[in-house]
Image 1: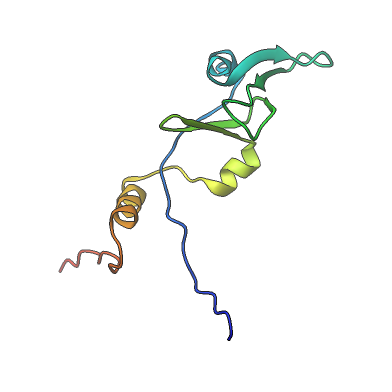
Image 2 (image 1 turned 180 degrees about the horizontal axis):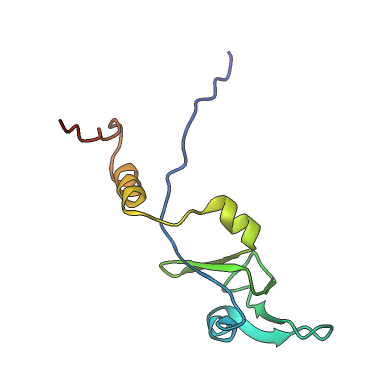
Length: 113
């Protein structure tokens, strides 16, 4: 018997996201941990509460915080940019279609004369 792997596409999902800045870091710290300052250079960072965000220890300006319902996650800028794109109406339509349909073909673009 030969094992045959088939190709699949992971279903996309929408998140709300905000980039961490020096201006908003204190406000974001209230949601995910405690605001601290590096002793070496005074850079502000969030010491993350691992019960709230289990995969990250510290969040610095330039990181991104995402929210989907009650789930909050934090990403370094490079990882965030590799995994997320800003949503548009067209992308939202595809996300909705993919998540609501099973076994259907993709919607056809409207043909105009």
